[in-house]
Image (cartoon, rainbow, N blue to C red):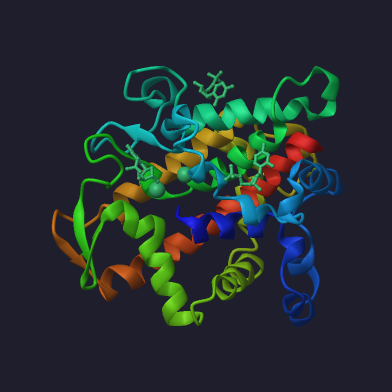
Length: 299
Ligand code: DCM
Ligand code: DCM
Ligand code: DCM
Ligand code: ZN
Ligand code: ZN
């Protein structure tokens, strides 16, 4: 995602920070913070002072340090075999030199592990501020379908297209162009308007799916039982959840993002209006799951 996509994911996760207007306009569940008290306190403690307790303001930090931390640029995506439309950690999670674990899922596992040392600070050898900023960014990226795309086109980066009259590449259409066009057309160029609309979808149209987004791991047989309090004993682990998110990503890339696009395609209203719902869904899932992940880490 570009800046606004990451901002949206982190804002949804830390949703107690939504504007006052929203707090008054809607009642009940919409207003409940997604983060537990412990997670909310840990996030505030780890954020640098300059962030003013606002995780969203630093959600693109990982993109800004790609050049300073050169090793980190391979951690923003996963390349899967062309046209297979499946994802496997052992097969696909490596960088272009073949080094294992150097991909989005490896990074999510790694920074989740680092943050688990928050409870025993004397033993922590990590910079947990950076770990939080990386993890929050990468849980966003794994929800951008083309960040779990094909190898030969680098997740749509080598597919030249026109976004309406302007030149772009398919990857950038999904990172940025569609979100910006939505903001211009529907929300007065204001990302907060789009975030409010997505938050409303989460509490209305998607409310019966949200528990499944938060709790289901790879083992889908644990999912139908979400109403049982016992499900809390079956919290998914990071491998299962990340596999699920990445698998959803490559499936959406195949059936929605790459679909009907070829080199030099012109993408306009037809593409925009039919794909935008998937963008909203993925941003919503990213936010809900970032919060659920931080709750699992910090208790
Ligand atoms: N930041 C920090 N400590 C870290 C990582 C980041 O205080 N370990 C802060 C410094 C800046 C902001 O994040 O306020 C953006 O950092 P950068 O200048 O690296 O983009
Ligand atoms: N990694 C990182 N910072 C570290 C160690 C590793 O960003 N201090 C990255 C590169 C690793 C990936 O995360 O290959 C997954 O790490 P691991 O295989 O140790 O879980
Ligand atoms: N990217 C990707 N898959 C790749 C290479 C890059 O998803 N195989 C992502 C990372 C950035 C964007 O595409 O979000 C542009 O990458 P770069 O700046 O490395 O060209
Ligand atoms: Zn991208
Ligand atoms: Zn990224």
